[in-house]
Length: 119
Image (cartoon, rainbow, N blue to C red):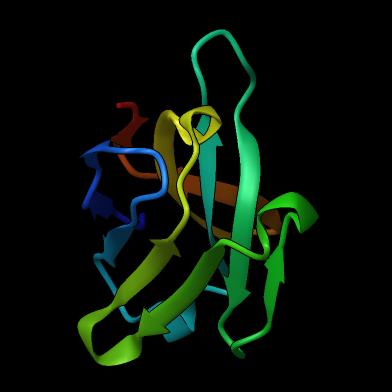
């Protein structure tokens, strides 16, 4: 199993920035896809961005201009850099690792980190 630990959330004013970190329990090259999701109060969890083990990156179109996913493989860490934050970005942000094991797609999740954008 992959264990994921997120950090970096907090309270920030509109227009501010945050960098979220997700540390994996193993070499992230062994994980075909990692990503960030978020869940706002009363809403379903939604995808923010993904990065594959080969370095391919995809974003939800509405977030592409403000969010950047990147990684430090030596530190087994995936980051989500967020700028120009808006109140509607308030959510719990979750790190995800996805891979096929025994012919099944398994999703692993961190505990989440709260991001609150408010003045």
